[in-house]
Length: 362
Image (cartoon, rainbow, N blue to C red; front, side):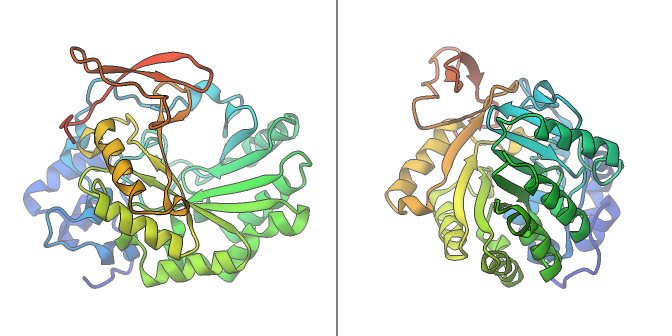
């Protein structure tokens, strides 16, 4: 496909690009009114419009199924709000906090766990007052060793803003690690300029802090030549690189695709970090697998990949109780009658969890 010049954001854009049939225009427009839509030119060029099951399209092209919530799905599925002492901060674990710097993304994933709060036409980032209050909270909380800068996607902001935040965090003595979570290196690699790389590295230059970028990537086709070049620019600046992947039905829910993705990331100098089980976000059941299927994939990968290439398969317990490894005794077997299983959080508390996907066998 010819690379479009601008991002695709409306039902009309999707029809024009050949990603949605004209007969589905009205239904997709309804989805777009509820949840933000954006597909960058880079990702649009990777989508095969002749393939109804294209794994890239499945991540970014809206589906009418998103309008139908399943039992157990939540507007705030991982419980950010329960751990937000001030706007922009989520402090769920003692030694690390999220700084939700941006409210927008270059693309909007159809499975996003923050889909109820991002891309809603608000300001692109925290206001000056909100950012200062968030930084003040971090300064006043010496237990915070690591700050994860997220959003939205923080790398959609200007290099100047990124440098300012990196420098402010670097000036806090007890903050030793600054981690930026982003899809930009993959979905908008042209934004990873020398200026942006230098801005990210400002934390290390100003305060000797370790700087990481966690790159969200779900399918090997996302790693285009441009994406690999952007990742290389980050690596060559001394920025540590890890990846996050979401297990998605019809995208990467087989051992062969996952193996290719993880090998490709590692070869690009990105350490696979987390494989997330799909969160209970509204209207996403058609994209979730069962836990049993995810465990099966991980068992297959252990026989094919070195430990360096293996991510940790994790589940965020709904309600804000944190993430736990799925295959390390935290997740029990399902009850044969109810289908529910016990899930233990890091504090040893037991919660009941039921798979909520359109086909429990997958």
